[in-house]
Each structure stands twice: as structure tokens, then as C-alpha cells.
Image 1 (cartoon, rainbow, N blue to C red):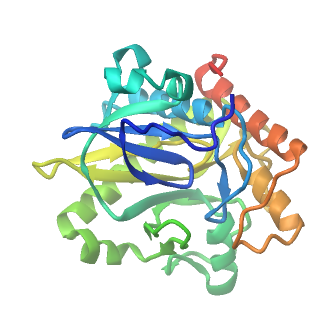
Image 2: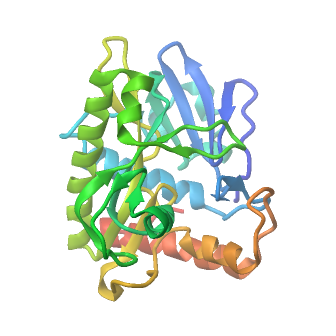
Amino acid sequence: MALLQSECPDLTLVARGKVRDLYEVDDNSLLFVATDRISAFDVIMTNSIPSKGKILTQISVFWFNYLSNIMPNHLITANFEEMPEKVKKYRDQLDGRCLLVKKLRVLPIEAIVRGYITGSGWKEYQKKGSICDIKLKVGLQESEKLDEPLFTPSTKAELGDHDENIHPSRVAGIVGPHLAKQIEEAALELYKRASAYALERGIIIADTKFEFGVDKENNLILIDEVLTPDSSRFWPAAGYKVGQGQDSFDKQYLRNYLESINFDKKNGIELPADVIENTMSKYVEAYQLLTGEEPRL
């Protein structure tokens, strides 16, 4: 069953994001519900990709577990049998697509890490020789691997607005110098560890986005989704070739379709069946390669 929007009246709705519905469970915990909505260019499409939220949830859980020795994360449980009773009553909507997580103070920074030059970074480089105003060496080609991964943060925009790429030096002015340093170091370490693992399994993680929060003691905690096809560019390593765009295991297929029809990047549209099917197949393949298992859909 596809879920475009959850309806849980006995839970307190905190927010609806591009993909996730967020509920308050109690004073210390929240419920993240991954719907089947899909967005591109910060715009939500009008129809859904059935079971997409379930596969996103499973990928995030995999990475939360794999990366837990690097830093703590907000996951309490993804096992539906361990959910509070007030959550279990919505099993038909939520089973397989929700995370019970710790309630934390969310930091207003998207910690983007780029290991390869592509997307908006490639566009900026062509114009200015930089990414997020970080000057790079001359002569880079599209999709080329960078000498070292780059921390290229953005601000978190309100729903309907666009995130703003910023120079890393501006993060300190938003969250303070201590947290800014921690965010950059953590994001780079998480990316390096995850990209090495993925590469062994045939996936290049070209770039990704992390989000962080802090607890009452101001400890940095990894939150939100992590290293999913919604927040990352996954390329098949076998077909990788410098100097061109790459095939991918993420929603680049959807972006390419929207670009081909001159999508206005303002209002969502109804996606044709083949775009839905082909996009979902990319997500499934990514999960299979990363985990060696079939997703539970």
C-alpha cells in the first residue's frame, strides 16, 4: 500500500517534510515516518512511489548500525514490536516505515560532503572554478573524483524554499565555532567510512547530506535519514567514467526526466508510471548491493 501522507490523530504532528512526517510520542522521543512522497529540486511531486518509504527506512537503519562506532545517532528502535502502544495502533500505516528516535535540538545546517564533482557543484565549478566558494584546481572534469572529500554545507530551508549553499566558514556564525568544527569533522569521517564500504560493494557515493542535533549536554548526534538514495548520489562503480554524467542508483533518474520536460521547479507534477517504476528499481538495487539482502516491502 502506498502512503502519500500518514494520518495518526492520537499522535501530535510536529511537521511534514518533503518525505517524512514527524510526530511527538512523549517528552523524550519522536516518530519519524517515511512516506512514499518523492521530491526533486526541493519540490514534492503530486503522486507517490509505493514502498519507497520502507526502503529508505531500511537503508537508514543499516547505516545507523554500521556507523554507530563513529558517533552516536538518534535511533531508539525501528522494530515495530518495540514501539509504544499509541504507535502500534497505526500499524497498517506505519509498520516498516517508521523510526522511534530521541528528541534533540536540531542544528540548522545540512552537512553536505562531496567526493566527486557533479550536480550543482559541477555547475558552480564551470562558472567560478569553485564549489561553495571553495577554490579548486583548474582542469577538473565532470564526475571526477576530488583529491579529498569537500565539506560544502548549506542552510536548512523551510518547506517550499530552497536550501542555500554556504562557505564552510559561515557555519561557525550559525551554530558556534565548537559545533561547526565537530560537524565538519564528523561529516567527513562518516562519508569516508561509508564510501569505502560502498565502493567494495560496487557503489560510488559521489556525495551525501548529513544532519545533526545536540542533546541536553550539547553532545553532537547524527539524526534524520542517513546515506539513502534521497540524500545521496549513488553511482554504479562498474560503469563509472570521468568526463560525463553517470548512471545512478538514486533519484537522478527522476531529476533527468524533469529536466527533459523543462520542469519549472516550482510546482509538483504527476509522474508517469515508467518514471515511478524505474526510480524505485534504482532504490531496490542500491539496497541489494549495500546489504546483500532483499528489502522488506
